[in-house]
Amino acid sequence: MSKASPGDTIAAISTPLGMGGIGIVRLSGPQAPAIAQKIFRRKEEQGPLLSHRFYLGEVIRPEDGAVLDEVLLVFMRQPKTYTREDVLEIQCHSGALILQEILQAVLKSGARLAEPGEFTKRAFLNGRIDLTQAEAVIDLIRSQTQRSLELANRQRSGKLASQVRQMKERLLNLLALLEASIDFPEDEIPEFSPPEVTQQVMDARGELDALLRTYEEGKVYREGIAAVIVGRPNVGKSSLLNSLLKEERAIVTAIPGTTRDVIEEVVNIEGIPLRIMDTAGLRHARDVIEEIGVRRTQERLAEADLTIWVVDGSESLGSEDLDILPRVRPKKTVIALNKNDLPRRLSAEELQAQIPEAPLISISALHGSGIERLKKAIRAVVLNGKMESSSEIILSNIRHKRAIEVAREALSQALDGLKANLSWEFITLDLQRTLEALGEIVGETTSEEVLDRIFSQFCIGK
Image 1 (cartoon, rainbow, N blue to C red):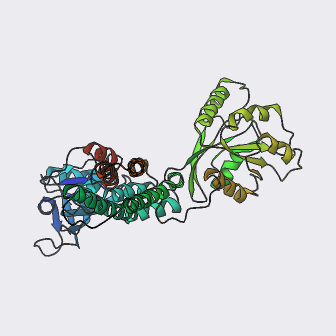
Image 2 (image 1 turned 90 degrees about the vertical axis):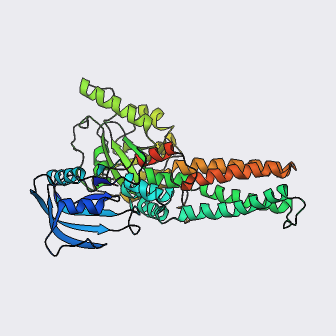
Image 3 (image 1 turned 60 degrees about the vertical axis):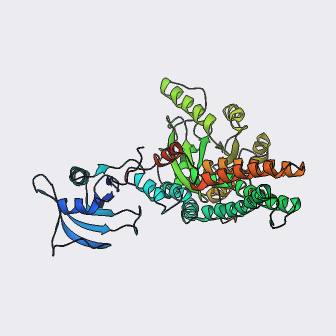
């Protein structure tokens, strides 16, 4: 991504392309009001655009004056805008051609096309938000469950950044005290003792440990879990997918081998985005197409975080069922004993003995019984049986986790140095490393390369 220039005015379509009620073209930069004068014809009195006020009018093509659309235009004067620059938004009818025509008119009038995430990057560079809040924007957009949306909003509100800054402030004060005692040993520096320093460092490390303990849960809610429904043909895998989705997504017949390819959907399981895949039944393939389906099933199974092993409770455990066991045993697994609406011919105890650590839930995928219990079992397995964290701040971003791990390691080295009675010079070096790592989280010491990588994940108009 190119570096933002104060002289640039950027523009992009900020709504998804397609037919709809409203589409938005957004501009940010010092030329925004001048561009509006070139392409916008108001339907009321003329004069300068007032900030944060909507105007009805028409967008015209600058080279020939042709009307492109009737629009609402709002001009927002800096600094009270998303980017802390002058911002212009044109709300038009949503259609791919209309939006492209208006964008081209804007670009021909002096703006340039925004890079991915450049609006949010400018908000960060201009000090409106910190880096954790900028990253939360993309998490908000990608949220697939209420829980993941809630966590993204907590980060967007600045809760993580606030805790990091408070910790930095305490460590900075400690560092200043230690450096003053080194540089001015003859002056009257407030007294402190190694045990007091040790306690402050231990307290800071304890805070970081508490944050790190929340990461696995946060990652699950942010990124979701890849789950594969496996089983031999005709045990009800597709019926289970349909039951979890509450819609007829997969074709269900009594003919074994109906599912030939992997069907993937996202389902909300107790707040967890589960990327769930219905797969071809695992057995010796009877034709080339089924062979491809079985091979893809095996590939998805190898990559999955969780397996849902579906077994037909109305039949005895067969060799095809047992052939699957070596593939699911190494994985986190939930056993779905299906078809409990039919006479039971398979002992639950016999099946449970195959994978004692896996929860076994009796269900009828066809009629929906036991599905809620199955969801709760899936959630418990994904979260390793832990209750949902009550912590106000939950880590979910691998970048934050790595920076905190670096900070924690530096604090541990400081504690080792204190225990070994090393001089304050060594302790201050460890504290400086800690502060640098914490600064990376909120973007105070983050390289341009890392910033470009973060904002390249955004869509063009955000």
